[in-house]
Length: 449
RNA sequence: UCCGCAGUAGCUCAAUGGCAGAGCAUCCGGCUGUUAACCGGAGGGUUGUAAGUUCGAGUCUUACCUGCGGAGCCA
Image (cartoon, rainbow, N blue to C red):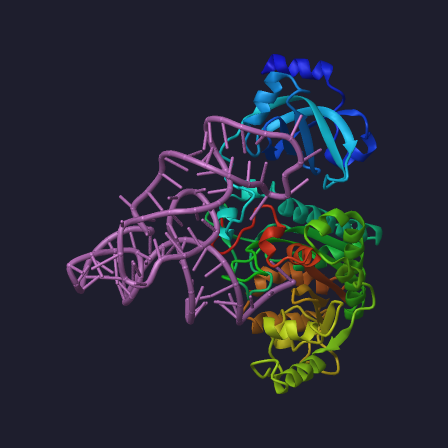
């Protein structure tokens, strides 16, 4: 194998990637990759090769290649690793527009029993083989979109003057006290918890840098079992000092629009593979519709009266999944619902000065039933108010003394939000379930591989 | 945690309470333009686990295990 490798190195043209074939039409190239599929017809072979950038079909004629190359190729199974050398040729019959007339091939690993075949498979089987499933075209496309979503978020915030200031993943106590946390053993018998939000830390860094964001994994030990939930997901959380609820809504619509535009620009091929209608993403431009919680409740009542919603929604509660879907169904843009009852929101939310029962919070509901992709709002500034809220929520004040310091030393109106990367990616891709938008999803009943 | 559905060959599925099957994958053979190629042949099974009903259980009953869909909660 080693000597063969040497021969190929010295005689073969420079390595090329499949997504660059158009620039090499008529030239000899070498592609290093894996066998995607192989069809044969006696004296002609059609190996399809993938290299991480795309898939290309090669054509090998028995009379045009050396006998040992022919024999090596004809027995190969799916996902065999090989490098091929051949001439790039434009061909209308080829899906990508180009084919390679194969001259030489070097097999690195011969495979005969790859588990994932070009036929249908169930979710459980595919998830058990997630480490291999990632190689298939659709999963590849989804994760390329994820990459672009992340890149778009970072580029947008960086260009807007935000500083990346990541929050810790080990935390000493609940940020919000309500949701279930993953507990881990720290040192000396002390317990630590995996972060469920960088929110409180962001408020500290915002007072230091003005505009900040954290970007990292988030853990929720809720036993949620829906297409919108992971126990480990990635969240970006911008926070701005001297900012209000209105500023958060504006930032939300600007950022989501920037993400959609970037996906359209950079991931056209992937959207085609996913059969995602680009018009759905082209519609995502400012301004987004804004709906006061009171008005949202009125709409839900209308929906119930028309028989389109089963349960009659009571003012004061948080929306369920069917409620969110009903509300957002009227729009082809994300819907921003604001001024929720404070009772259903976190303790640190600022209150409406005229109606203190309302929190200055906003949820951004994505269209097409994708649900809440952003949640955020304005934070409370008063030391006394926060002490009351901490007591009301049965939280230990000593754990929050550092946070209360932010109100003792230069407290100003400030606001921010959190966006779930996987929910956003699933929406951009138009796919059913968030589990396909992260390389190795962690769910209620899925810790492996 | 609650409600509903499912578990049969490596995979996707079929089989009135009566001999456990097909397609794909694998192996062998054929085919010079295939697009989930096609054609012929071969191998491949403790029907999720345990107990029960029955002359007889993949099929009916109970429990458990595993997964899927949804709810609640959330991004």
